[in-house]
Length: 416
Image (cartoon, rainbow, N blue to C red):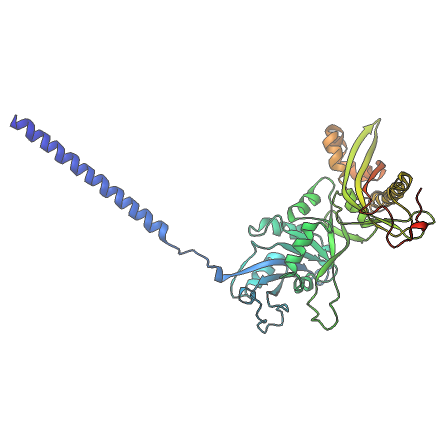
């Protein structure tokens, strides 16, 4: 009996020692993990970052260096204090623009870092502006840099500017903290072509090998205000064949381009009714463009259908607009105007520039993959001869709050 009790005590002691060893080993493991995880040796404090809100790309000319500009947020001035004394600081002191040159953008970026005391961080870059001279040299190397360098956002908006891009970044719009924020809001409102870095790369590398960008200009400042206290605005659409800028189109052709791309919003069409004085303004609620390709007996054709609905927002004629005949007449004139604008933009692309801006190639590849693969190498010669038919359907939904024109005597209003 005594021997059995002694054995039990020995087993209990051994089990206790084993538990102690396991506990010690576990505690040591947790201690080592804690030592490894608790360190912040590779941290980057927010106070050590120069946060870039927008990037600008310029070129003084063919064969010259590239100029890379960065609009950097100045946090110490964001509460409304006056600017520090740098001539490059915008009027409100919210941003500062720094630039550097290089034989390529990567080299310019490194040189730009040497001019800034903080680590330049591009992860919050919302807008990329490409100057016209830089655009003429081709977009491929810019896109390669913007997509390859990990910090840039693929969904940052891209614009082309008539003045140097650096001048666009230096502006401080009265309603926004920076020109980068103003351009981001304009892109969200679809005031022009809404194109991101990723969209631009897909367009150029796609089967159509073309692209469009909104073109920026600078609004003249109000009298007595600082020359930088103004904002950029969109004026026209820049057209690119492959990666090279070829020309800019303005209204009304630019409106047709946006309709073909399904990107027209915030626009008003004005029509004049026969010999009557005044006009009627119609605001589209939505515009939908669809393209249906067809290959029959070796003939390539494309049917473009545009459907839209809209409201009358202004009537300066002496006509009552609730009469069915008047509504039909307005719809007919609206349809004719839209058809002319869209057809002109199609003819520009097919007959004059011979560049597939509207995605004909992608539509044929999707619907006729075998024929497309067999003819892909000849697409540039096929595209100008594609037979395009256009059909526009319009519908006026509402004529506004009032049937009769305002400010016109009742006995002179025409109701028919």
